[in-house]
Image: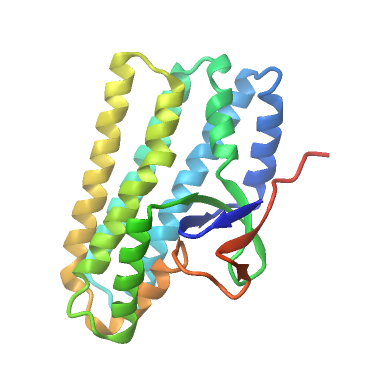
Length: 248
């Protein structure tokens, strides 16, 4: 199995792939309430880890050398979004019957890969992005690295577009698989729209406070999860990707 560029890859805690594999195997026969609770916990941790990998770690890194009130506010927004993820995942799980879980488990199981992105095999949640976003990423990241970018605005808009594309496999498609009634479905649409708005407002407010000397650092961070070009350990655009381990 291989993962072809372009894609987004977010590192996972070491325990998550094994726990999800076990949950996936059990979903082929019979799931109990404890499985549903575990699924909610794994999903919450995955969402929060992705927010940390894509946003919080960058904010913390910049704040160490260029501390500002705006950066602290952005970190607060990121924590607020994580809190909303924890709350609404738990809320959704409460509405979900055990027999409606298997398609959702299978979906997230299919997003877990063991990738070597230059520092050895590690577990990631990974999914492809559009060629349009990848082309824009290559162009924008190059300008941030070589100093030709006159502002960080294009880098911020690139990150916003990446969020927009990530929402589809991480939120919209799983929501559709759960087949909720109209009221719950509309509530979740509202939550997703709110999270989009919070991310967009936070990032655009941050842009004017990032000096040019930080542009290469921002680009390097984006490249840790926005994989749009081949690495030395890839062949023909396919990165080494092990299948998920089967439980003993």
